[in-house]
Length: 342
Image (cartoon, rainbow, N blue to C red; front, side):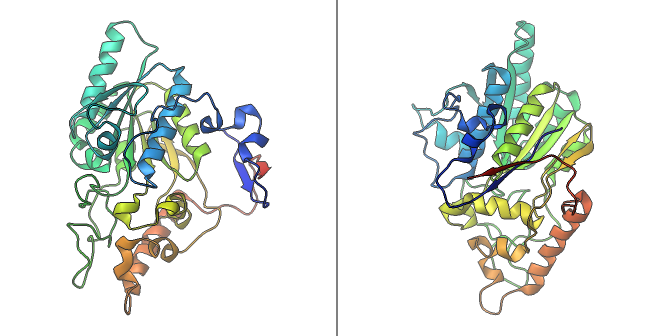
């Protein structure tokens, strides 16, 4: 996907960067007429990354489809905080599914639209990491195999946050959760378990797979737009930090997401038909310690004498991602960039 990266530079003013861009380069969120698919009044925790991710992604999908969109939502944090009966914060056609069958329900919705001749109506399914990589994995794999015309979005906060911060298949090594306590010689979640869901999606050979974070709005929105230009099964995996479960400050959600990418622990890339077609380069390489140390779920790695051996193993994971996806920026930039001062 060809795009012009936008670099923002802080110069001490209160100017909003988007206002300095051409209309076509501005984000959906800068548009006062955006859909506001997830409206105010929901009950998400302060600083919730999932609330940001859902609003960013679905607002972009609404613009890409001209408002012709239906969302299917698995049980989880997003469903619970946005629809406390009899209220809702959704301003789109929205269906609630069980924890593990959102891909199947979305498939049925897409099939119904096709039978009714409403081919302009597109379908998005969404779930947290538990409903994606664990409970919903079978349904999702089936959706990929059948190549159903659905964009599935995983909002990855790396644990079952809605039910008490239990480990999921997306919980990283050494992280403390309610079921992986920070005790013993190998505290926190064990190494070598879990699932790399974006790579599993790529292995199905579907038309589009991408990762993104809430820290780069332009990148996230561009990937949603690209996904909605295609048909068949598509997958978008968005990192959405959870201040409650991660033990980070509510004001640091964007910072934490940015560090996950800048350390290499969360590679940001896109793939078509099983082949990586583009990566978001690391702009300022950072050690994993700067990312881990601001999260309470890793406090045991730095308290007392600390666990530099475990930190080194996590750094090795980041280095492996950097090598696998070629995440370090080249000295010479061949891409055209738009520089914006704000």
